[in-house]
Amino acid sequence: MANGVERETGLMIFSDEELREMSGVKKGGEYIEVTCGCTSHRYGDAVGRLRVFSNGDLEITCECTPGCNEVTELSLISYQQDNAVSSDKLTPAAFEKHSGRETARKWKNNVWVIVNGEKVPLSKTVLLKYYNQALKNGNGSHRSHNGRVCHRDEFVLCTSCNKERRFRLRTKEECLIHHNALADKNWKCSDLPYDKITCDDEEERASRRVYRGCTRSPTCKGCTSCVCFGCEICRFSDCSCQTCIDFTMNAKA
Image (cartoon, rainbow, N blue to C red; front, top):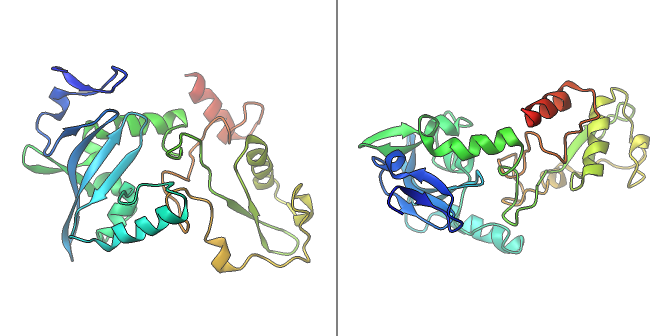
């Protein structure tokens, strides 16, 4: 297409004008790819390839060094999870951490692309348009690669025995159970409707609690694939809490 980057379905992702001065632009069926990087004051620039998908997903292939250890680690994760993730892809947050950036957790400002020969933060480009839209609409960023919404397991502290109990958030019913438990200041183990856990049961070992169901990394501490900022599964139109009210109002806007 002469005037833009086009999906196989015919929907334009970015116009040629928006990408004109960016370095390393390649066009795929449902994504565009550009050269990216992240700078550490100690280690210098880590360079990679950023893929921007029309559903809001962002993936980075690290090219910092030949045979990068991160690729090996992700390959093992992919094998363990039945190829749930690509063997050489990172989220922007993971790439930022891998680069050794000292002020991590600010990947929108720390990960850059080359525009007209200059390093420009992602936050100042058009490349986050679909990512931000997915966050606003409550979809995309917390979907696994098979398209299903993914919520990681969460823990709630029992007010009686002071032990943390795991909540699985795979269905709307499970999300509602967790939602109500968080709202209950006096929640106890006996209130859990499944697993029939009592205060006498042992708490999960710390080594086990790190596994929370992320589709990208078994021991993920929270990324754009498993942390949801609100969707139809974990927000409830008949709930009077401010979080659900705000989501419902934004969804109607």
